[in-house]
Amino acid sequence: MSKPAGYITTDTSNDILTVTICNPGKKNAISQSMLREIECIANEVSKSRSTRGVVFQGDGTEAFASGADISEFEDSRDPDNSASYDRSSEGTLLSVAHIPVPTIAVVRGFCFGGGLSLAITCDYRISDTTAQFAIPAARLGISYPVGSLKRLVDTVGPEHAKALLFTAERVDADRALRMNLVQEVLEPEAVAGRIELISVRLRENAPLSIVASKAIINSMVNRSPIDRETLDLASDMSNRCINSSDYKEGVRAFLERRSPKFTGS
Image 1: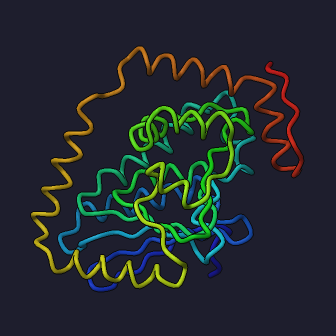
Image 2 (image 1 turned 90 degrees about the vertical axis):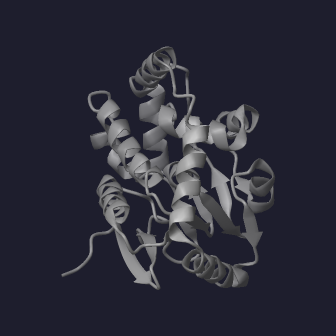
């Protein structure tokens, strides 16, 4: 039986689970069905007593994930169901965030939009020197989901978050390191060895100690939840964007491989 155009694969070796994002021809863009697969995997890992760590990566070397699969937007992210789309995506990211063991994103090539949201949700991010990071929301006419925005600001600070969102520019690996988007940048040939070394450390060290450290640190940094006023503002601004002609223009321009012409309406 042939696999769908976009799918997720898993492989377990020495108690380390590797989750691979596969979408040939779309630079590993993540579809809604792929998000559901990731959520199911994350929920299963959270029940596991044997998994010592989870590695997320993209298939091949061209991309970790180029973002959400924009070809789905006209049907699945229109004004009638945009809120449910965002809730579904956030549900997947929260399931990854709640994995009790360490999670590592290994970034090669493009890491854009929803792909970057997934990477930031992981505990630790390693990239090779080919990596490029971007949030193209302003090129699509959408408002970045509030959960992903909160994690972005917590990771890089408000100034860097604004720069990424205002310009939609691509950031290379060295700048990403300075911004804390990643914690290590390695030459491509060195990445596999580094992941193996980290995996060895995770297997050698006391699992209850690691789980405790992650749980306590996460509790510390999550003590300031998003308040109702911010949530209401985010919902209002998201609705304004998704109902705009600019959103339609942004999606069509992307699918037609041309520059969008925005009017602010």
